[in-house]
Length: 204
Length: 305
Image 1: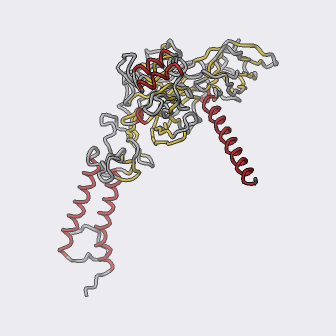
Image 2: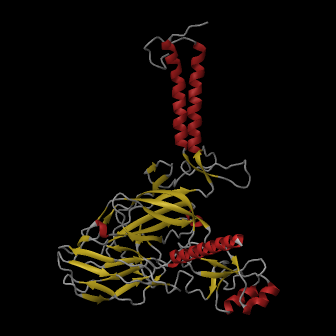
Image 3: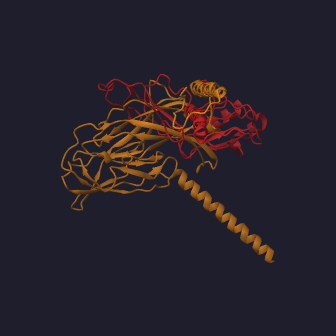
């Protein structure tokens, strides 16, 4: 049995401590934060680390990490005052376009997506093919499409054609604000509102 | 018979509870309430050339309801008002330059909401005029930090659970010759999947929070995921604005996500490389030491060969 002096134990343990410390530091550098979970399968989880990811590689030097590991980075330093000769411009619908970081902002809107509490007709492939969805309290999204009986004017179309262009057209023709599921306004988008939507959409 | 009574009682209680809930939901969902006044009620040293604001929920509609301006002598006059329905700000200009040191009261009206006759709540604004005019634009150091999280709350209008990104913005120092507390904060999203980089999107208008407090911006998951940047300006009571400073950015990940540590081999390879290098270096050092098998004398420092 080899007796190891106490002082030697201390010295021998130091490299171990330093390596653990180094690993800990490296782990911290790697970042403790929110990692996205892949829900396709339960085993192959892609590791995309918000804190360790290349947060704005084009950004300036200022970087900080807060307690929950969220990196905040200031964009590259702007010139002294890029907005010096860019006064606010009144918007036709109210508010102003302001110069922000050298660019004029968009005109403000009453809400993000829809007027809070407003409703639009949606089309759902259940029994009645007709439903109502309500705008969220913050105006940022619609809730689920909840099935309802269609109005009498559209009842026969709903029975015969189910969810269809003709049913959406019937919705429009009868003065509702309707979800444009079939791009009847030809703007290349589906899901946007169409019809009598003055109290639903954010623009007047 | 007793069972029937109990059944009826339970049904009655359940029905009344359901009705109460529905009423509460409708009220909280659509009520065009007054949120705050700018400046805050009780403000002092309000510039003598100030305009005054009340911020309502954005579903509020202004239909020329009278705004009453009460002079120190108790005389009330109706003053013209303009309403910006994009921000919910009702704005008045006092009928004459304010008299330094005098106390005034503004009685803001109750407003109706879009497509509803429900009246919202209101408030009075009491303030005391200062002795100076506001002549210089405010100064503002801009946003200093951004943190984010995802909230899942039950929506009062839809009754469903909504996921939202909540960005908490640290604010730099703001100052104005009309007083910091009467400034309005305007926040813009300058980068994000749904934002045109050449036209920052207005996302928040509110009275500036007290010094040291943060502001919060809420977005949908779709518009809040990825590389997100914000910038902000402040505006004084004469509508002069500050500069914005540089945008401040953060990268978000889409929910669901895991709170923990990762080495991010796919995108954030720097951390993984550092960890690997440090670990390899430490192991190499240990491997070199081990064959020697000699103990260091007492008091000797590490790594002494």
